[in-house]
Amino acid sequence: MTRRRVVVTGMGALTPCGVGLDATWAAITAGTSGIGPITLFDATSLATRFAGEVRGFVPEDHMDRKLARRLGRYQQFAMAAGEMAMRDAGLVVAPAAAERAAVVVGSCVGGLSEAETAMLATGLRDPSSVGPFFILNVLPNMAASQLSMRHGFKGPSWSTNSACATSAHALGDAMRVIQRDEADVVLAGGAEAPVGFMCLAGFGALRALSTRNDDPTRASRPFDAGRDGFVLGEGSAMLVLEELEHARARGARIYAELAGYGSNSDAHHVTQPAPEHEGGQRCMRAALRDAQLAPTDIGYINAHGTSTPLGDVAECVAITAVFGDHARVVPVSSTKSMMGHLTGAAGAAEACLSILAMTTGVIPPTINLDQPDPAISLDCVPNASRRQESGAVMSNSFGFGGTNAVLVFARVDDQ
Image (cartoon, rainbow, N blue to C red; front, side, top):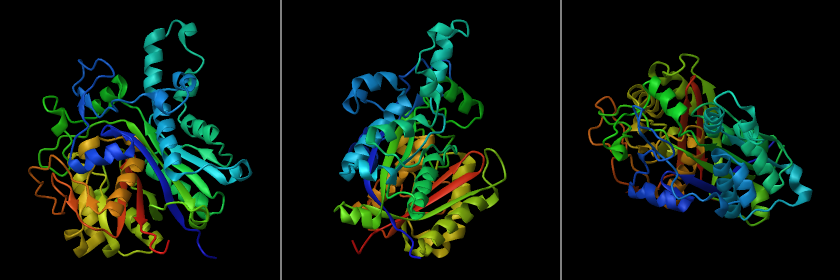
């Protein structure tokens, strides 16, 4: 039986680097950081007082004002990015085809910020101060549900939750739904609004965050010898995935084929990768097998690259093990150096950037890479984007708990 091919026909994103994918891509290729002092709450007491916030976002520009007032921030992000992706795809699903359209949208912490706000407001004493939409804003699956209702998608709808690999898993799951012939169209991605006291304090307690409060734009420095932790970010990215012939039949513009997906677990440690990132190696190999591609077919790798001392080296060791001699020449960069770590939305946002690297012939840089870690010997595209045509591209996402997801995108040359 011929495998159903899955293509990307629409993309939408809002990130600390810009509202909209065009604005984000312009900042990324210019090497412009979206990280700055926290404005969403008073962070004075915290060890880390900066993050990647989405600035200039007006929810009512993307949805009905009444709905915007009801939704929490992460759901607002999801709705906006979903609207952008659907518009970009030029797609309206007719009622007769609604059961063939699905939604898979992940979030790592969902409405944690809303929960925090509600707790502070009630002081755990006044239940009448808890609003009727509180629970609906906390549930991680509600972004997918809202998007299903907005666009009339009556096929499967669910949420993934796998730490930093959340939205990469959402895209991979969406790919499998189409391959199993359970849908022809899936709106998939992730949304996250984690910039609140509890998240910053919690990640700080893990000693996972950078504390460069004197220079936030230079705090996220993947692969650099002076890196001291990741930078928390917020935002959303959504992609419209379609079965290839379905997309062709409606004359859709096709960005890329989602050709390969790998998913597995380290089964090793809650925060540290396995030695030599053995799980990451297996996951990259699985994605390449699924895509029926060789390592030499990959022309760019968007690394997980969070700017942590252990994680960056482990990922680079894994890439070297999988790619062999090709590891010396394939560009590997971390766009988290500019956006920060969007946690549950990171995989989808980085998938969009990987696709644009392939379609535009521009490789995004790793900024703040001033003193390369001597333990890392890869071409990490330091500080400036590069014009370089690439074949297929790979996007890595590795999460707490040892959960791994790798996506491979390729050109559809015969479209």
